Image (cartoon, rainbow, N blue to C red; front, side, top):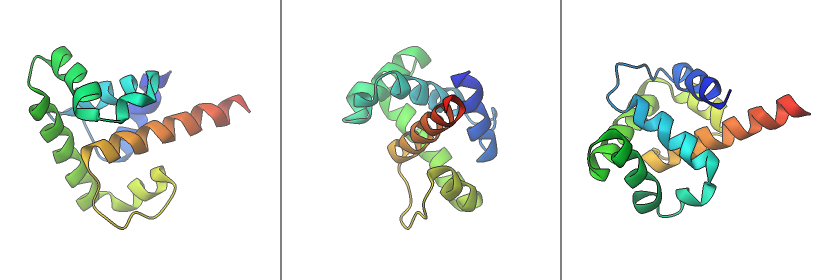
Length: 114
């Protein structure tokens, strides 16, 4: 169920499977949902895990997710603000994007339970 919600949010933001970082972002969100502490010092605690699973470097994972973040900011800003739940004033980083998606998935799960 979590993977479906993650896919839905990514699709809403215009993130399709043709992005090199699509599966990396999806995995980063899933790992952060398992343990939110991974968002603190994400380079070591999150992106390294994604890099190992993807067979590439931590820097490549960050760069791929950052490219997605920049494209979302440029082309789907309003949807991003809706998913975030507030108006964003500064460009987001890769880690900000993961955090926004994690919070949105958590809200969705909470709302479906209550």
